[in-house]
Each structure stands twice: as structure tokens, then as C-alpha cells.
Amino acid sequence: MQDTPDASKNFHYGNSRIAKQHLGIVKLCEDFGMECTIYQHWDMLEKPIVSRHGPKGGRFIDGMYTYNNIMSHIQGITIVHDTGISSDHDMIISKCDLGIEKFIPSQDKEERCDFRSIMNISVTIKRGQDHPSLDDNVYKGVEYHRNKNLFYSLQEVIHDPKLHILEEVEFIKNELKEFEQQIILRTKTTITEEDQRNGKLIQRLPADAQMINNMSIRFFEAIINMCQNTKLSTKVPIVQSAATIARRYDVIKEKIIPGIASIPVSRQIDDAIKRLKITLQRLQFLILSIQRYLRVQQHVSYWKMTKSSIIKAH
Image 1 (spheres, rainbow, N blue to C red):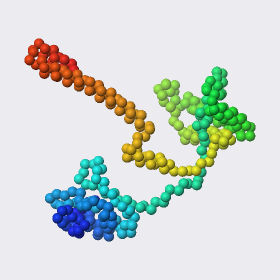
Image 2 (image 1 turned 60 degrees about the horizontal axis):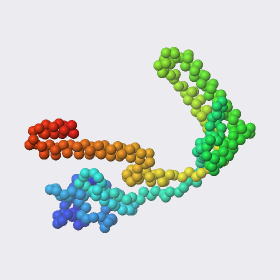
Image 3 (image 1 turned 120 degrees about the horizontal axis):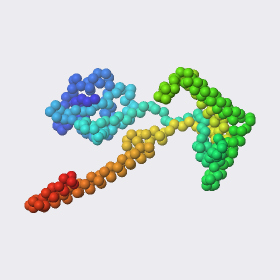
Image 4 (image 1 turned 30 degrees about the vertical axis):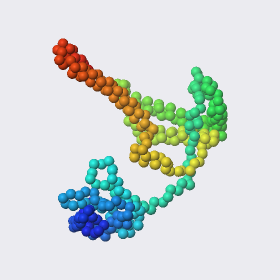
């Protein structure tokens, strides 16, 4: 919001005095009982605060009008002269105390499973077997022995008759096989072979989605049960990722480049450098040809050959 200033001594530009615009924003805000927050922070601002002046006088950016009960929440005012936007105005930012409470870590805890430790175990599937076994063809260092102990601990937990993990996995496997046969039978009865070759599929029913979701939930419950009995499950406090939020603002302000974007950006920079080198070399060829043409303008025999050389270089 902008408007011409009033006739007070606080607003001036040189020796001129500008009258308040009776139809401006300032008049409208004052009619609503609002006050300008700039007065209490006047000593921090550069004077005079005139964003534009011309035949019709100066214009004062007064976009900081608020009600009296909110005046105490205005902690400061900052003027941004260079916003990167082509404009004859400055940006004025009000520093407001919104009354937000300070961050307090949550006392609630959630269960987290260390699936990465399981994925780091080096395994292999030998010929004639359908279950992976420990891979011995790796470096047998400290990490290998730790993964080895974890692998055997997982096997003991899975085959523990008291936990019934293996029976649960076998039940899920049989249910999915039966579900697969139902889908195949429904496909044969509703879609012809020619339509199947053309890629036509049967419509998924709500019962199908419910079946898949139920089996998925039971499968992950079995995995979590296994992790709980191998001490791979822990209770950790739920803490907001304040660092992630700060990094997000740094990315917005272009202070840092996210890692996922740095690779394509660096590749584009390398490609641009290669293209610039090629362009520079070809420009040098063209410049040499032009210089050569200027030297041999007086000799007709050399002129034709030089002209063809310029066309080729171009």
C-alpha cells in the first residue's frame, strides 16, 4: 500500500511539504482506527522515506498500519532496497512477534525398526535352493562377523515355535497364491485371449484391494515381530526435523543446492563449458579467416580461395 505522507514534520523531502491525500490509503486506515507502526521505529530507518517523487510529489510506502492492540507486537522494521525486482519502490518488512511458543521436543515415542542392518547382510541364493544363505565370498572383517551373527539370530527367531512367524509367512504365501488363482480364473472367464494379448486387464474390485492391503499388513506385522525379538526395534522420541526446515529455507534462498539437484546441475555446467569451448574454437577459425581476407583483398587470385575459406569456417 502506498500514499502521500501527511503534513507533519516527520515527512519531508528537501524544503517541500506534501499534503495528505484525502482519498488515499492513509486516510482510509486512520478512519478504521489504525496507526502506522513506523513512528516507534523511526530512529532505525533511513530518512527521508520517499519511494518515488515527480511532478505530483513524493509517495511514502505506508504498508504497516495496524490496530492499537497489535502495536506492541511489532518488534522492528527493515527496508530492503534491492529485491531483484525492477521497481521504483523499496520493500518494507515488519518484524512481528506472533506469540508462537518456543520449540519443545515431544515426549511421545514411536517404534522404529533398523531394516538397514538386515539389508546390509551379504547373502546369496545357491543353485537348487529358494532361500538365501550367508555369502562367504566377501571380506570377513568386523562388519561381516556382525552381519553373520545377525543372520543366525534372525534364523533362530523365525524358526522359534513360540513366535509362529514362519507359520504366519506360510499362511500369507498360501493366501496370495489362492488369490492369484482367483484372478487368473476371473481373467479367463471375462476376457478373451485376443483381448489379453492386446493388453486388456480385468477391473480391480474393492475386495481385491482389501485383500492385498490385509496381506500386506499381516506381512509387515510379521517383520516387525521378528525385529522386536532380534533387538532391531527401538522406541525413539518424536522430534520435529528443525534442521530439515532450516535447510529448506536455505534452498529457497539459493544458499545451498540440494544433493539430488547438484548432480544434474553440475552435468549441465560441464556440458555448457564444452559447448563454449567448441564455440570459442570456431569463432577463432572465423576470425583468422576474416583477417586473412582483409589482407588479400588486393589480390584477386587469393581472394576467391580466401572467400571459400571464410564460408567454410562460418
